[in-house]
Length: 490
Image: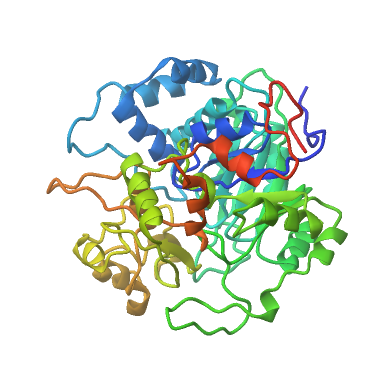
């Protein structure tokens, strides 16, 4: 029998941010979950993360255990034989999965389901805490397959932002019942009511005999207005919200209405962007506050505003269990201890059109020389824009691809100025950057919240810190005993 009801019990006071690509990997989520809080894995680009890890590290005992639990063993054999049979060495390029399209099928979809399953399954091993997965609404093509894999692994929470995902709560219910889903596909230039613009996914090939459970759905929003819209318009139950302030890392919601920029080019937020927490409270759903939460005082402030707790990303991004490349993480920590690292909000870096936080770190894309010398290339394609071609078919373009190619596809020249390939850059940030034909490796890009330098408080008399240190640093009369030995929630 399938259980599609919401999870029982109270909610965690701390949500570890779902930072992609693979910064919030299973080791970090497992560490946070084992201490009674909500550990979250990033589902962004999880298929290529998985196959690149296979090429680098092969299969150890824990991974084999997780693979053995996947219901469709034919899928496991195919993916492992393709990508895990031979180790990659030196500057040999990774073998990657092809960029997704609305017509992708077979191995491309199988890899998403399997990779999402494995990431959640590994995060859940060794404790009885809660695990969530974070996805971006803007990254449309892999969503259904990612949700399927996570549900098969028993994920407890699904968190989604970078858009208004009104179609996801109902999709979770159908997937938990083992039923096909159709998700909308936004195509620039096409009529919104075109029935052909949908993504069909059938979970049947991946189902086993175990009962599935619908996970809680938490929408990541920037305002009480969006929270209200999501609660009222969704095709299924919404179980809570994370309200992210503009100081949060990664993608930010743009200011509402017309806005200006400061001397550094950062967008300026105004009165329309102020969150009314009374409105949020009146929705009758739990909410967490994210962005700029770096101390126990900030946690106490969130409780005073009626929140169930906080979401924290930046402090966890640089802890020992983070998926950030260790050498890059060490360099950022050293720069913070030596002085400070500047974080700017770029209106151009992301091809999504959303503002994106970029930390100024040497030898990364934030360095103009590094940006200028990188070959423009879009071969992962998660943030590509689907558009209607003159012949009526659907094409894909990205402002970070070669300029001539983008213009040929109807893109505007001005959109390419300063545009960054976040897919390749963030893949490099987690240590999985592609090697190019000339032997050079893709340079990383570092995104962090505005208060990155507050991690200095965690570096007093030490060179690094753990996820446990972060939780202890933030705790307000909260027990941080492992979940297997104590209550999971506040």
